[in-house]
Image 1: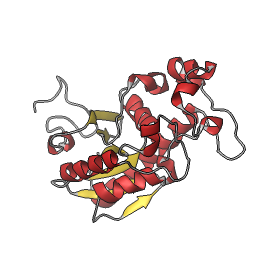
Image 2: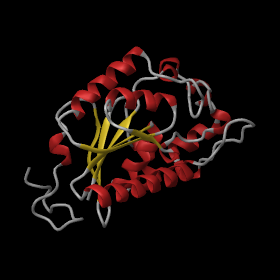
Image 3: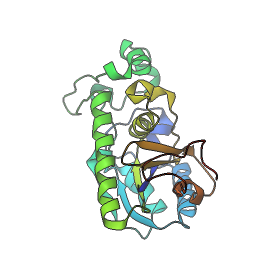
Image 4: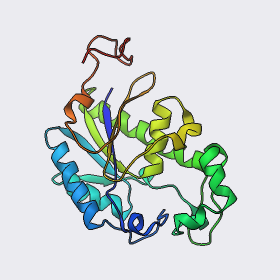
Length: 230
């Protein structure tokens, strides 16, 4: 029952320009993104972070360097952004005019991004399987090494974190676009033997300690009936 804090990278140059960055190289943080990452460091400071893992993309590594200063951050491609293929680097306003946009919004499970000569393409379902599988595997490693009370941090991207949240609340990929994940936000998820449990989503400020507390009146892996006693 380790707990993972899913940190979306801070505001990036692609965010500022309204571009779908994907796996484009050279997309770093803006001043706003760096400020967000420093605030995350302040929120994380009271916690003991057992492990820090990041998407290998620049904007995530820059976020991790500021938010998790003093920690050894390991890059893991399973936490990387969706491979958007030919949509990589496109203005979001332009992409919104295409038929695929409505599929992405209304039926994410059927959305596959178009092939591109230089950028890999995958479906949203493939992305979700990759990220959720990676989070489960990493969480099991953390719990085996550090125990069931361990807290670890995964630095990733909007769509991957949305996929984990949708899975945690039982919506599956169909619920992907019902989730909001802002730059610099922290989402807390507990992985139990039975299910994922969403503890908090898209938090931008506040004490993190209450979010990582384990239920005291329920068997391991179960959620407290009635919602918990606080």
